[in-house]
Image 1 (cartoon, rainbow, N blue to C red):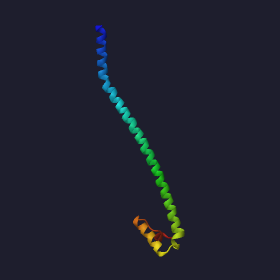
Image 2 (cartoon, rainbow, N blue to C red):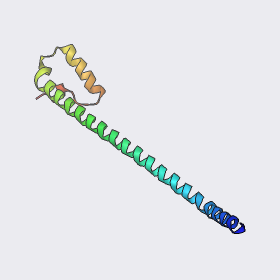
Image 3 (cartoon, rainbow, N blue to C red):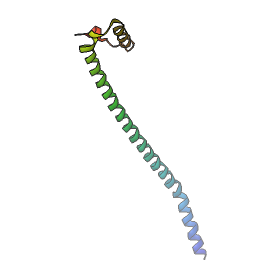
Length: 100
């Protein structure tokens, strides 16, 4: 029976030496997986937002071109002044400054 007890103590000593390493590796692995998942989610959101910004920019560009080429000349003076104020607020040349 003494041999059995010695074997149990020996196995316990081995477990005690390796257990912190295994727990540490497990924690590092889980941390890396969580970070990789978070990074994938973050990059996905950024890609979606970039696409939305590109779409909004394209729409704004087309609306600005349409305003400049067709509608601006038909607006009343107060309407033109209101539009000029908006463009000045965004520090963008207004249709009146760029009219063809």
